[in-house]
Length: 94
Image 1 (cartoon, helix red, strand yellow):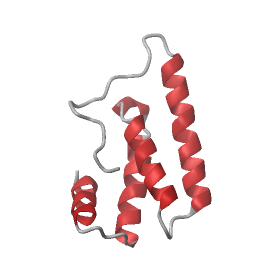
Image 2 (cartoon, rainbow, N blue to C red):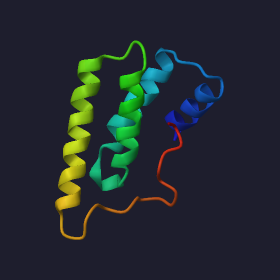
Image 3 (tube, rainbow, N blue to C red):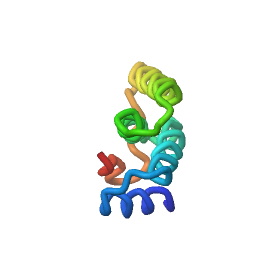
Image 4 (cartoon, rainbow, N blue to C red):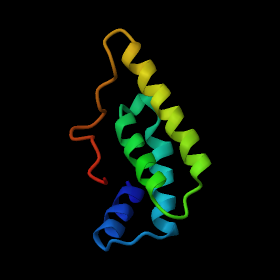
């Protein structure tokens, strides 16, 4: 995925720019889809946004709340949370 690759490059250079914020926000929104089984990744991206400068804290807080609610619903379903859709789906972007 383009945004993940871009974020990895920016992280390697320790760059915190608007491009980094855009990538984090896109990935958090994208991975909040419970079908993907990557709600933990969405939460990690939200946490990074919350800790960064320049991010809209209210928007990030609302997104984080939504991700956590989705995680709670997934945990309450019979069979528990959906497994990650791909092997090694947990994020290394922390």
